[in-house]
Length: 603
Image (cartoon, rainbow, N blue to C red; front, top):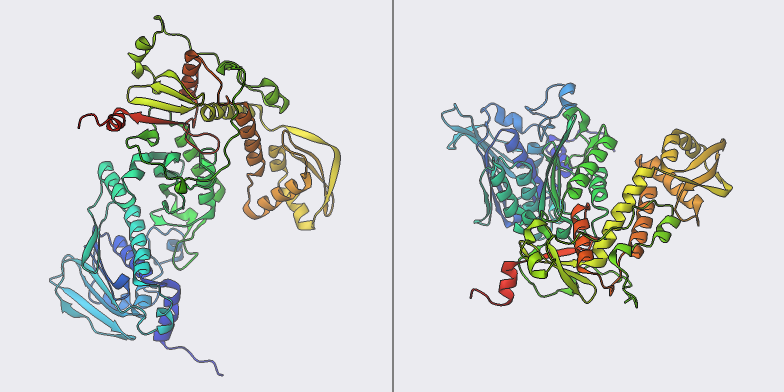
């Protein structure tokens, strides 16, 4: 078969396969064009899940009549002119592929009017044929109509899902666009029914109102606002408190320079920030906006522009992880809305994450909270732990319950009333009743203390009784030499002893020694493929979590009221005290309204 040049219509249909995967792709491209044109109000009308009709109308800058046919030619764009522009992309679109690709697989019309024009102009494109521009009625702005998507490519159309499924994808795309650009008003209409009518949000209150509409009041109630800047990187947005964790990662929205993206490295940074406070089967919820120098972001990676490459990926990862860690750690009792219970729902065990219960045994004796930390166990593992906590000083008065109850607002968690079944601490504060899981709270306190002690002491090494020689390939051995500072930072001592041989002489102190070669190979694989590794840190944290769990107060141990108060004060001073090391809550607040409802007061 001889080589021939393909007709333009077929070229556009082939190109459409990369840009237009489903109706949601069409909406994304059209709305991004509207945003690039400066539109502040965008109306999206959809029929039959977007398969029958997609119409996007905006109040943007519009186009001149002579530009309308040009807009439907491949690689015709107003957004870049030179290679330097491609290296500093500040718009959502830039390739000039979207409109011709969409027009190639639909019945397409484009109507546009500039502000100074007396009327609008329209062009139509059906089956590769483009009409001449004709006058049309339309206010300043642009309207694009896409009918019968994939009508001329049956092979593509048969891969579409049901109308309901396609609309779900489309609605999620609109949600992402609405979160990305809150200053633009968006209206979504499906089969004549208005689903979202979002006015432009320019003030913090209106932005939060949009969040509540799109993600629900619960998300906003549990959200922590984040804002952090450093050099050429800025972060803003909302992260949900760990109490609002999700069974699926369906409320995770990350934007880089206004563009919704998927990036494994940045997603890892978010998980890293939540690692100490989230149950292993749960997912964090967040809406985060990263602003970077456009020259440091390569968005010309994938036709859908969902993936990016970062010039300083490691620096950006660490900035994001540290910013979120600081935000989560800064929350103290009294400001953590995620622990306030205003309703008393019936339990739903089927929705709760499954995890083996802790072995809570009732002790025959009743040692005090202040002496419940087993010094020997922690010291034996090499951790320098601060001295046991003393009981809180007694009130200046006679310490009667009535006197202490009269001043609950002096501390966020209030003052202890007593224990329940030796497991829970009951306290009164200004809001109402606080219920604390004593073991879980004490476990978190010990864990944070161990982490501080480890950080102050730095990495320590433990020499192997017999050094281990490991055979690698030459490339791996070169990497071992290249990452020499990292091995020292991890607490490993490793030397290259041949072209493809290294000798492992020491491992991080306190870690299990059953498989030193396996640990080393895992670390090397992480560094070679990811440029970083968290394995040593993760194992250290697992060890500290185990020590804290075994050292914490057990169920059934009787504590005095001053000792219970000491636990409350320690919780108020401790980072991340709202969750135990397994991600479960350590305390809940029952406000007075919830208590009144229990007893039908006020009815």
